[in-house]
Length: 561
Ligand SMILES: [Zn+2]
Image (cartoon, rainbow, N blue to C red; front, side, top):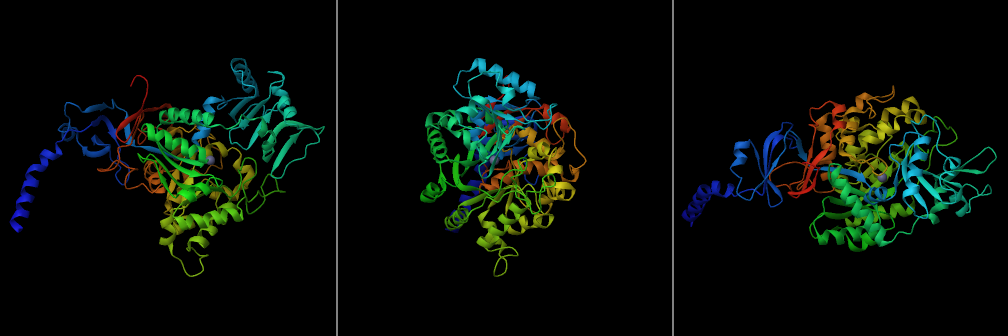
């Protein structure tokens, strides 16, 4: 018997070079290939078979795996990385942005009017919807109002949502159709900005936006499906192979699963559903599409609002608005959802921007999962860690709370581009002292916390290169920074790469399969025209995604490539 084993072992050893020489489906070479994870040094060549990485190393080593059917991907100097995953975005909104008037990059009120007017003549939808303006750098130094819009297309309602989704400007026709007059009171959690005479000027903040909700086109499966198709088309082109899709309603979950059943999606999608859809998720348990590209196992909750509109919950009042310190939105019902999620092994992801909201969520997690200083009977960090619960944004932290993330195993899911957008107004909202714990991703990484990077698109553009740049440069897109921008919170390039690769893989329970280029892992690759590990920050912004592969198949290829 023993001899037979030895004989089999010998045969195996003799044959194994032949086995290893089974041709690859694809090989990649011709530029630096960064494997991510622990290794910082690039390799020269990579081989893929059956959707997974099978070999990496020198070009001559990989050449032996080239057969007649092998596809050769010549990088021509471009740089390859493990597939980039956007750790927090909204696919539906990304698609909707393409179907409606996209106002990103609008430079002034004058520019806004020009864009709206061009769109209005080309599109005849009964209500004109736009999204993406932000007035923080406009020369006029103010938000647009109804009087700016009224002359463009009189009588046709217009709703233009601010980039952060926490305010919109309506024209007079929209206000009229929604029945908003000088007599309309501010709803709870919302505000109508008014003229000196007291009539609404068209700007609706937070819950006041609900007053015009009736003018929005109804959400039909056809519209939702159109938006998702559009998102699946544009998002790979921005350099991503995966996305953590936040606040997803049940219709979108079923549409994405149905689409995945038809043909492989060009993106891996990890869904965290809305509180409303949590009932459906609790009924079905964790969900995996047939090809594993759509995973649904999270519920997204809200602990507070946003900093721009002073809805973020702070311990002390806003420095530029001492009468308010924001609003806690977490309810008893949300806590019940957390308990149920714990029971069923589902992930909780809570939006928390302000320091008070973050502390509250950390405490809630500790109490419920049984760890940290607030746990009744000693701490049990590994029990907490196993759940991999997350705080979305983790934007403003009391310095003392930073270490709780690592201690409790709570994942911080942060958006580098928010810092370079918000740092124009965050110092005035927060005052000097509180900036110390704001957008503090380096402090979190150094404390041992898992930090996931994402864009929150459509709030931001959602470009992999912009997020990477913001994480390492912490300057705006022109390279400028203010005195309060805490350059010490810049990440190293290795750390930044981790934010978009291994960390999101871990945060979606898929680190054994995704997140680095390693033998046996799924072959997800993002290729950029610039070498992110070496290029000057400004050059990174000049670059673009040239190719993405998901499961070894090309998901996106730039024109002329
Ligand atoms: Zn978001």
